[in-house]
Amino acid sequence: VKRKIKVGVIGAGRIGKIHTENIIRYVPQAEIAAVADIYVDRIKDWANDFGIEKLTTDYMEILNDDEIEIVIICSPTDTHSKIIIESAEVGKHIFCEKPIDLDLGKIRQTIKSIDKSGVKFQIGFNRRFDHNFKKIKELIKNGSAGNIYLVKITSWDPEVPPIEYVKVSGGLFLDMAIHDFDMARFLTDSEAKEVYAVGDVFINPAVKDAGDIDTAIVTLRLENGAMVVIDNCRKAPHGYDQRVEVLGSKGFVFTSNDTETTAALGTESGIHSEKPFYFFTQRYKDSYINEILTFFDAVINNKNTPVGAVDGLRPVIMGMAAIKSLKENRPVKIEEVENADL
Ligand SMILES: NC(=O)c1ccc[n+]([C@@H]2O[C@H](COP(=O)([O-])OP(=O)(O)OC[C@H]3O[C@@H](n4cnc5c(N)ncnc54)[C@H](O)[C@@H]3O)[C@@H](O)[C@H]2O)c1
Image 1 (cartoon, protein in one colour):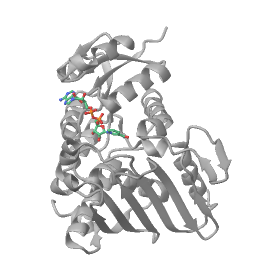
Image 2 (cartoon, rainbow, N blue to C red; image 1 turned 180 degrees about the vertical axis):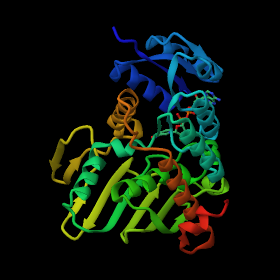
Image 3 (cartoon, rainbow, N blue to C red; image 1 turned 90 degrees about the horizontal axis):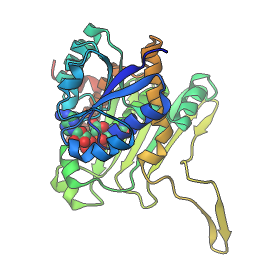
Image 4 (cartoon, helix red, strand yellow; image 1 turned 90 degrees about the vertical axis):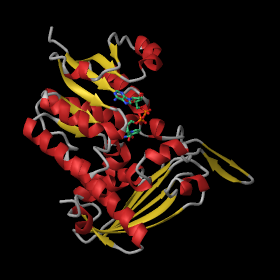
């Protein structure tokens, strides 16, 4: 019998549990050797249910275990760059949740250390693995839509997150829109040249007190000439709304939201269909499975991971340009932000 690849998970909150369960269910070549979380008491029952034997409060126990080949980093954002660098130094392959960091200097330092070590690295931009968005990319790539003129990305949440979360999130552009910045790059294979953002607080004044916004529109001008509009809102009445539309010289490509069923009820008052799935854990359930399968395939079969370290850098630069644009009320060139800290 072939030995299973040992995996250590660091941080078992919302997303850490999802990845751990998916590895257990869908990656027969791997086993969860240990889970580290500073609040280990909170995860005891869960770990027991999934047959995870080793829990620790100190993730260094995972990094110091020579039998563990892969780390899955799902602790809070402000721990990522440090843990990535430490993991790369001891030669572990790394899957890390987005973003790498909110500081460009730290991201660059982290990328250097990944490159130097030669370990596999994948960053958690799961929406690239969503069935709808994968299909849109395919239709753009195979030329079905022709030359791309414009891309519209809609990304609305069902609820404003707790204010404590908002305060440390990095703000709407780096916490929420970052997935959409990645989507723009993924779909078009082009980088942003210029960013213009408008934003406001409509939903909860506490968001304003925390120095953030809850609603925004971002316009991107891409290097290949195409234009992108991203609209974000923290609370739409009908819930989590995630759609993309692309217009090109030969075709219009678009998706609808995923729903639990496609059943609809027609009555005298109209046709009533279901709301979108409530939030990301349901809507993107399959994308999380696909991204983890892709990562393990890259490690096991020595392939390149499809979402690498540079994909962790570019969307943060776009987010910073959006922040600057909102603050200064003008379009901001990417190079203004990109080179600011060099
Ligand atoms: N790709 C996505 O769709 C997606 C979705 C949610 C979260 N995320 C990202 O995942 C990360 C975690 O988010 P979450 O929502 O799961 O947060 P969470 O607060 O639910 O979970 C974080 C966990 O990490 C633990 N932790 C904190 N410091 C630690 C340390 N030093 N060592 C080990 N464990 C530690 C906490 O106790 C907690 O259990 C964030 O970076 C977030 O941006 C990505």
